[in-house]
Amino acid sequence: MADAKVIPFGEEPRSRRAAKRARGRGPSSPSASPSSSSPSSGSGSGSGSGAAATSGPHSLSSVPDQPDGVEDSPHVDEQTPGPAQPHAAAHGTGGPAMAEDPAEDPAEDPAAGATEDGAESGGGDWDRRLAEGFAFLRRRVTGDYEVDEFGYDKELTDQVLMSLIRPLYANYFRVEVKGIENIPSDGGALVVSNHSGTLPLDGLMMQVAVHDNHPAGRHLRLLAADLVFMLPVVNELARKAGHTLACAEDAERLLQRGEIVGVMPEGFKGLGKPFGERYKLQRFGRGGFVSTALRHGVPIVPCSIVGAEEIYPMIGNSKTLARLLGFPYFPITPTFPWLGPLGALPLPTKWTIQFGEPIPTDGYPPEAAEDPMLMFNLTDQVREQIQHTLYKLLVQRRSVFF
Image (cartoon, rainbow, N blue to C red; front, top):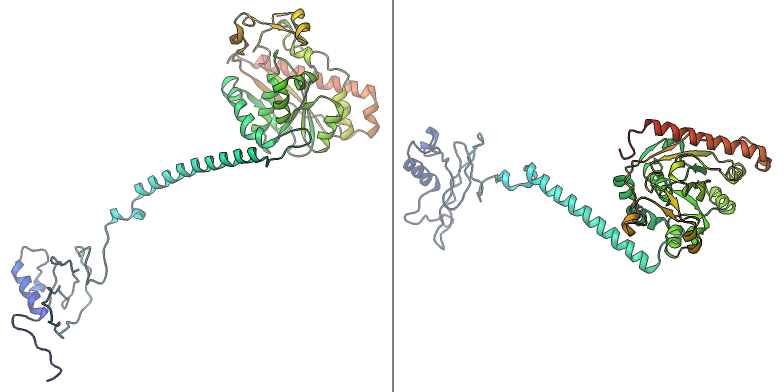
């Protein structure tokens, strides 16, 4: 008798209290089923204390708070497993499991997950760009960047210079590129192109065309005239963009390193020719580019550019001003110099750049570079292939501007 617990007056066993509450709800309550009328079974929703309900003939009900100093009854009802109730309380403290609202779980809400992923993706992209921009500026300030022996700055060219030229290439001239697969994926090659347009914008467009369209992302190293490297600002930009002096020594050093070298043999004769002689190739010089290709056994890739002739229709040449300024020519166009700086805006013509079938040179003996007849024949072959392609592209062109 010493171990017996005394139930205070007014306190009943939990099974009886559950049965009374079940009878008090009546038949209209969804929790009052025929099995719940039995004193030995209690199946009901949680009361104000938030207890979870379990099903079965001997389920436990919630126990009201007891006064201080009163212990629970030692009587414990045996629980019998039963079918799960769909209306079990969501926040019970005594139930075997706690249900959760699917709307509160982001993993079960596809719309919320997609929104969060999209926000993270957009924010992450901007964060990555800002981080790359700050890293680029830090390298510029500290001088932690590479420049080759010619002054070529690959990082500056890819991230800044190409980005400045690309809108002119893609949106203004709407350049269409053909035959880019004729430029080899590795090793050196010599790209030979026609030259026109009063200002040398065709070389810049060809450089972007190779960089943006070649599967290997190759860079074109252009050989420029002496005048380019005599101008204060143009000199630095040309060196940074990978241009170098149009001489055999620089071309050979680049080809030895496996670079793609671009040359325009017409020079100023093609760049400053009158509008009436458009798309008629001038003389290709003495064939020095052929000799360079023969010495290193690299292929010669002919390139034809249509659309550059009309950006500045040159209707006259002021030779007096050209001599005073030290220029090879001083162009007079329908808009320049009559409209001042506005006249220097090029016309928005439609461009096409086509790279032709490469002409191999690796099958010739080393002494072939000293054979003048061979050089003349190969030079004429390259020139005729470029001229023929120009005529073909002009026939296919619908309009100068479209």
